[in-house]
Figure 1 (cartoon, rainbow, N blue to C red):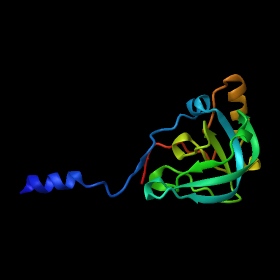
Figure 2: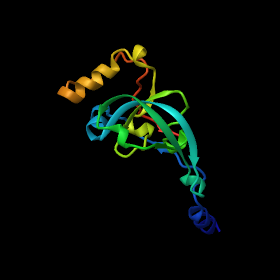
Figure 3: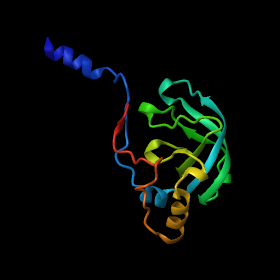
Figure 4: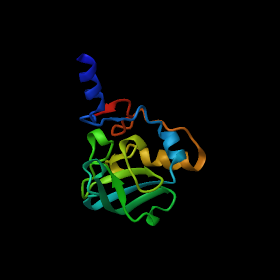
Length: 153
């Protein structure tokens, strides 16, 4: 009887899906990203594909500053809702630093909310210098930057 119950339970879909990023190496992320930029979210809508697990957020954005690539070629930004889907809960009017190849942003890619240039403790200058010369990033004293090393659920 136990075997039958275990078999039935193993065939059921999982009740939740969790996000697990591991530690984000920002230097690798920047090196592997086609686009690195800061943007203000101007509008969002749900990309409703019909299946709950395929829903996502589509955001329009205004470019604030670009570091790598030409983000003007991206028409929209895409992400999950945050939490277990690794998405970034885009908020209209907020700025985000985005690392992407195709407009998709997630916490696993290192993308996150950005506090504005006057509050970034030299972070944007370090990103620019790293892209130009390869100078190592020193993120120790960047108050808003917190590398992920956890499961998000």
